[in-house]
Length: 257
Image 1 (cartoon, rainbow, N blue to C red):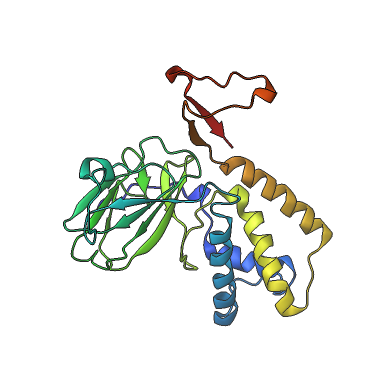
Image 2: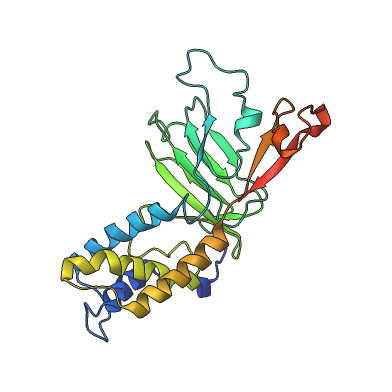
């Protein structure tokens, strides 16, 4: 598979975040170039947990299930058709129940911070492979990505600044952080907070100030909007002075933060 170059100036290695978290509370000496194995293992587990905890809260919406395939259904719903399931909306979990190989086209206009997740509850992804097509964008720095591991569970986070869906779960120390460098401080400080009690340290007031700033920027950047449809039979309160008789043309879409 041909991979296209992705700008390294917007990437920080996970190992650097781990090291800087230890440095934040002076748990390792200035000039330390690498953590030992125990330090890295401890910090990496906590960083993966932290990243998982911000997704759907500080960053984006919670994911909604999007069925793909018909295996296992006692009665297949009429809406479950290939021409529908191969075009999922943003913030979807693709629940794979496959009987054949599939190509899934990711959203053509993803918002910054949107997510796509894949689950293989049937455990037959090695038999019935799925190809994710970036649909005009990249996914893990490639135009397409082949999935062929049974029982796979993986999530991607869309970065509009580089036009790439970045993997966000089960990161290794050698991986790139999925988020832009301007949010490194947030993850460094959050990780330092999780490590400090293990070493009898507390967060410095100046560090706390930087964390509040970084969290505010992060939430503002990656807040998602979701369309909520109000049907014509939705009755608005006459106490507020609204007419409760709606016509078919009165259906509206309200953008929710």
